[in-house]
Length: 122
Image 1 (cartoon, rainbow, N blue to C red):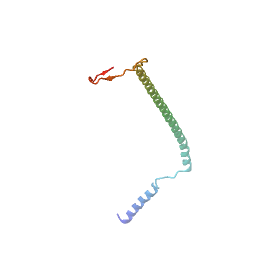
Image 2 (cartoon, rainbow, N blue to C red):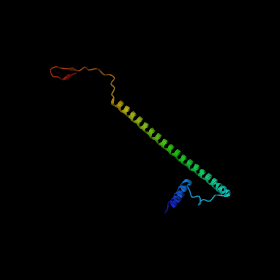
Image 3 (cartoon, rainbow, N blue to C red):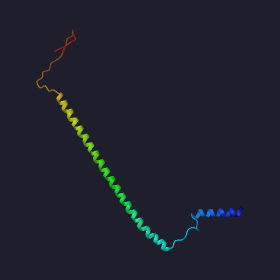
């Protein structure tokens, strides 16, 4: 292989990379074919957009239902916990009230210590 053949090969490779495709393989489209392809692509794109909007709306609705269910669940748990806390506080107050004995007619008795025995006397 001589130098001239290598230059031609290098020139063809660099030309292919610059244009991005081989010019001889690509046939030009006629205006009728181009308009026909546009006429087919426009309804396809419209249908795909409508399907996308439908699925987005369905996903959004499912997400809204999920958020509502979780909100109701947390509200229900908070309500139950508050009810249990109130009930336990009422039970604590009731048990404290049951344990407290109020004596209305009481006399104060003083305690005195005797020095010899170390016992308390009343």
